[in-house]
Length: 342
Image (cartoon, rainbow, N blue to C red):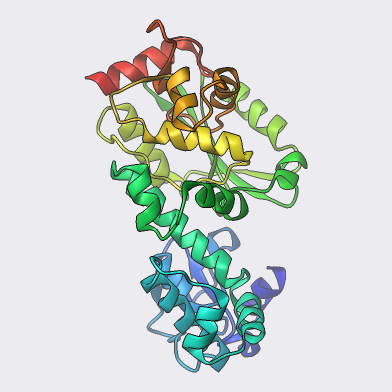
């Protein structure tokens, strides 16, 4: 990424047609040689394909016209991306894509990965998982959402989720080595709210009583990451969470970048299926994931949830109806359920 930033700083035309950069504060993407004023480094995101920048919500710069004179290979990969996006319900194997674009499987795979950074299969799975997250955020049934996204079974979903979503266990175990994490702490009706995110999504959402203890806990979990206090980039996500806390946002379909085992991911997915305003028992969740004897393991997975409310672990209660425990305090759990019931 330092090479790309140098290309922007020096307005290096050698990188035109090979990469584009987007500016978070303007919503516009440009080619490296764009004569416009140089943005701040923390506001810049790089894309190898203009289409990916547009998929992320950025608009092409009218001054430098970054879509003009694109490298033919980049143009071809953009076409493959668009085809995948329009055919997610189909079995998009490498052989299928190769036949569609009259390329050898080896050449297509190598070119796509060189330009996009991931394989066509990984790109397909990421889009499918994104589609499922959006569907669940709209209250759709998990099984229907899985099949609508092109998965043939729920087990296939969880296998792919481990490959595509979230920071890797190795990255997490290394304390977030080589990661940049933005975080902010704001006041809310339950005390203090900490929201932290990588470039891929939220990695921590926590409730606490004071700024110092929340910062200390975040630093302890990610001791090797580059932590930076933010008041701008995270504003949208913070506002959605605050709206949820006030009862004005029933569904939090926010992107996540969290480390999880396959079992934890199954449990957390089951939590996201619990309708707003309802609760389930630990046994209910164990049954929902097909492991009725795993109530204790389910409780441990729920207790390890790093993103309060986005994964609604507060909706799980004991079989006798009592609230049970809650990582961020039982009073807060009671308040969250009261808001939802109201």
